[in-house]
Length: 308
Image 1 (spheres, helix red, strand yellow):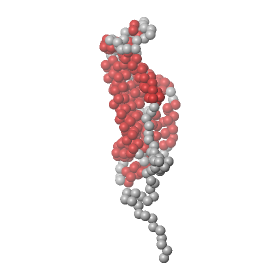
Image 2 (cartoon, helix red, strand yellow):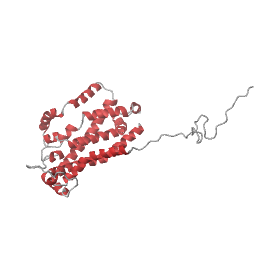
Image 3 (cartoon, helix red, strand yellow):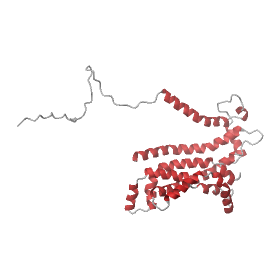
Image 4 (tube, helix red, strand yellow):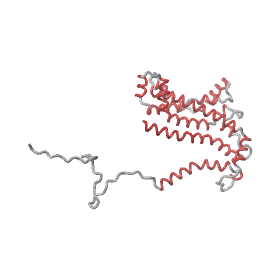
């Protein structure tokens, strides 16, 4: 019988077909294998990022400067770029000229109610359009998306006639109820759930005997939480900054922040420092909400990406 050549046994911890850790040796023209590494951004990248931060933050910084100065200081050429000592005095002037405290409370009630209602209703509708099968689903979705093409100014007169018939003029519900659902929110949540919610989870829940309501609260809501946080933040900012419909439906007795700011700086020469002080007061709650939800939004998106 002919001898069959046998390969020498591999060493402990070494596979016979594994590539050697070095492709070459020193002194023989061979160099160690290099592994790719991720490098940090260069000076140009950091300079561009720093410039972008400065450009983005300068309007808010100028608001603080203008709110702490007098109207005469703002008229100087070149203008001053350092905060002044009149911030508290301008805040007191804002309180005297407009009921900013009540306006902040009204805006908080309106924006919070609209945000909660929009997130809940749009998530429910988005789940129905994304995963439920019913007759006319495509047509209803097309009509919903088509309403985004209609300018909101066209519906002001019939909407005002409706709230007048209901006796809601100069009441907060006249601003809250028309904004409890939005076509953009429905479309946004529908697209999010189409990509993030597997059909297998819903089928498994159906096999276990779960109803649609149980599926929504136990499966859909945990998966849709990042999208709901993004939609909630966008809705809150839009409701807080809305001026057109509140100025139509409300009066100076029940104002929101944007309606109350209209009363500032009256007279022949507008006091820009008082106006900027009121603007600063109206901006701080939005920054606070963004600071509280911003990290949760990013963290939720990253967590959903890892789990997906």
